[in-house]
Length: 257
View 1: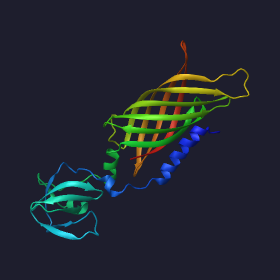
View 2 (view 1 turned 135 degrees about the horizontal axis):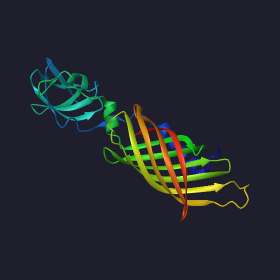
View 3 (view 1 turned 45 degrees about the vertical axis):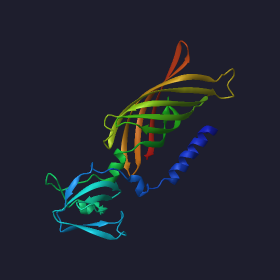
View 4 (view 1 turned 120 degrees about the horizontal axis):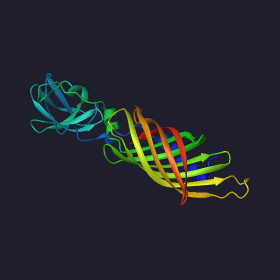
């Protein structure tokens, strides 16, 4: 399927981003942890390190029955404040032996799940069928609320008698965005351009406004990758009194920041 220059550039940008993708530095995972939760040491002691890693020296030991307060998460390490004001870093495994103020053992969500729940920006690509013809699209999304996000998409369809370029911006609603398997709805507006093959006689390029409505399903694969499938209804307003509808199904893969 021939790819137009604009799509080549977008695809190259996506490939470059994917090739450069690495697990984020530990500092990127920093975040306030558990609303400064207080915990009581249940083991004989807990060691506080000067930094978030085993290579940092231990500078203070909190004894059994002392209280510590969680201040910050840094991957699998947590910055805590002891009762005497000492601030240091403790590995999650040690904190799992502590007791909450209610007297139960402290538990933590997996770090990867935390990253998924806190995702903001997503970049991906999909392949599918647009009215039985092959379609390629590239999209980026911004999640600005727990259940709401904005997604921008550019795509290309290469048919037998014509090619089509389009773009649209959607408002996505994802009621169960905290679930690994999550359905979503989307509505949006954009532009549609159909370019007939040069071999056709008296064929003209069609430029039209585009309305999009669709449903989809996302699945958090692992790390920062998400698989998705979506079904969309594309309505191109080709004239004041005439519109054309197209149905599309797409499989995609994305990664999030």
